Image 1: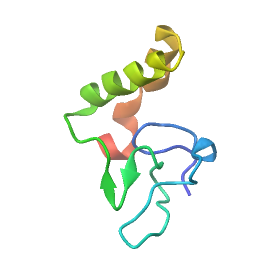
Image 2: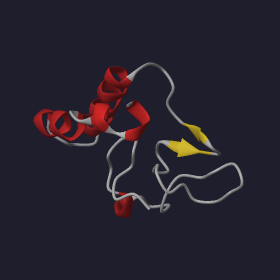
Image 3: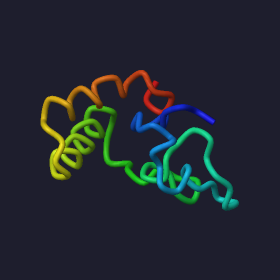
Image 4: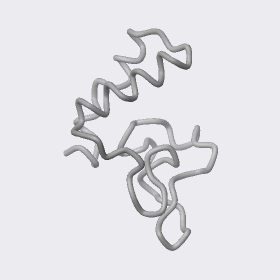
Length: 83
């Protein structure tokens, strides 16, 4: 299993479901349950920059300060999903 989700960089150990779901019901070894369900990505509305902004908004709405939200999302382009 990856240490971090290869879509959003969330630590996999922080995923309450222990990983996303494959089409056969198995756990994804690469993606968290927030990003991946039933063998598909849950967010498909643009490229990496759009996804970064989407994640930043969620983080800020949940109490994270804007700088930390930027810091946590700045390297998304290096993750497997976005290469």
